[in-house]
Length: 146
Ligand code: FES
Image (cartoon, rainbow, N blue to C red; front, side):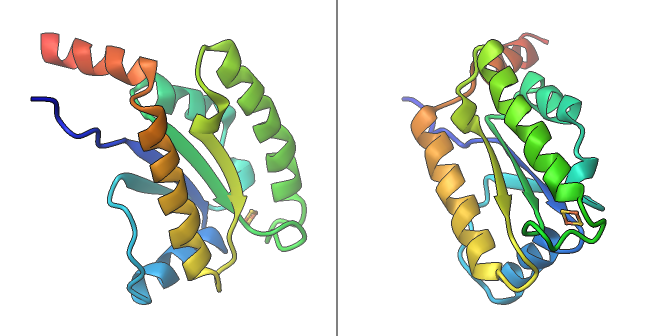
């Protein structure tokens, strides 16, 4: 009997918009998949691409970065830098043999609880369709062997 695939997804949220949007989604009691964990950063620009690669190396099936809408970053141009950096991350993922759809950058404001729920749920569904990440399979096998 095969177990149902429960994806492991990491969602980096900037403190000022996306995290507040996540909070609003919770307060508003929107239905959100349980297959993700949030890491709060002060700005989306704080998310080092190395953290994303590390998450995949450690078995994440998908990673999202959520920040303020362009023009709304509390550190003026942080999310413009994020947008440029994350375009490179997508290219890097394919170099490492990962489907670039396992990563998503999205803008979510503090007033967009519904959008937070929608983008996370859609992402979880996409990852379920893609199946476990090849690195995740390796990591799970190594953990079982210990
Ligand atoms: Fe939200 Fe910079 S503070 S993206």
